[in-house]
Length: 541
Figure (cartoon, helix red, strand yellow):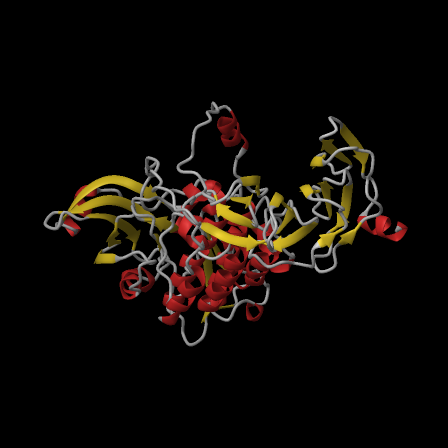
């Protein structure tokens, strides 16, 4: 890489040069400032003709300048002289997605997917393929507006696809057709976006291997593991983008964004994007799905005092932290030396540092408000949602936004005594004064008729860790077990558990689900062994 600042300064005399911001396989990035406009910029220095052809490098600035969209980095100027090519673009002080991804929520990950798909939709409409979508190429400005950058290896698509004689990309995110040196198209970028979303939502990429060649074989032939811990509809959207055949992936980046918006809204409720902290500039039809206003709680609290902003990470082209994030070249006629090894991220040390921090209890903003007394509250397993029961209504909240409720469920004219989430967060149970238990989807849809069987008020309810069994306790001094493995046809499991002489006010499962404890107003706690499957118990009835 050429780092002679005097020579670079002579090519862009209108700018003051600053510190080095980043360095990667394709170039060097320096900070800069326009002398007259006092505008901070990033100046990317590339080799001209590093592939034996100057046109791709000369064309990068023209391509970027023609892609005018809030989610694509803006290009202000470009200069080519001998073996140097300089691109002057906006400064992005918010750092890369690679720096943020470990602390990203699932909702924020979906917001990243929508913004990236929107940027790709604009590029594809102009015949431009990115070909290297990955967290290191997703950046944020100072106001948390996402920008897709580094179209340095993109080429104009001729017709409906581009056939590459030499393929460039990052093995972890490359589509099968890139490894096979076949025809590339918009679906190639969607595959990389699918890999990135899979990694953001699960914490690990779909494929891991000790070297690029083994990784290539996995991308071409292996079926990616199921995306666990994610709602089925959302997982289905991501997995479809990972189809081996490009024809089986979404028809376009816009179509993918629509599918993702619908699934995320079904999973997280209306207005979910408002709590992610990521600014979005979406097409009208996508925004209509994502930004439907959330329901407002009966009493609106005072504004939440915002926490101090964390120190901004290193701006612009951040260096890859792993060799596997470096671009890789595949040639049809010969191997290329210097292929980087793939290394797994070291997460243990970061986790250890987090565990060593002191714990302090303090209020988090303003309280979640009800108009009646609150009888019960429960967190979802991921800690992002809170359900609370008051009078005849269950409210569902995002813990990041106390001012607005995500949803509310009216439980007939009956006081709600207890609420509980299933382990996967997809189902919510409410126990009521009317002697019944109701099952809900997070969207507020009742999944079945009320579960009836208690002879008195149902005081408490809890799901087993596997989410297939529900326990409830009531003023009839009984504990009942329910098979909820099928949403549409839940039912009782055997006879009531009798033994208490007072109302059962609390029920709880052990972590393995094999033991159930029940607490009663008769001053006793009883233990019950629950060691048969739902199917076995149903057969015994």
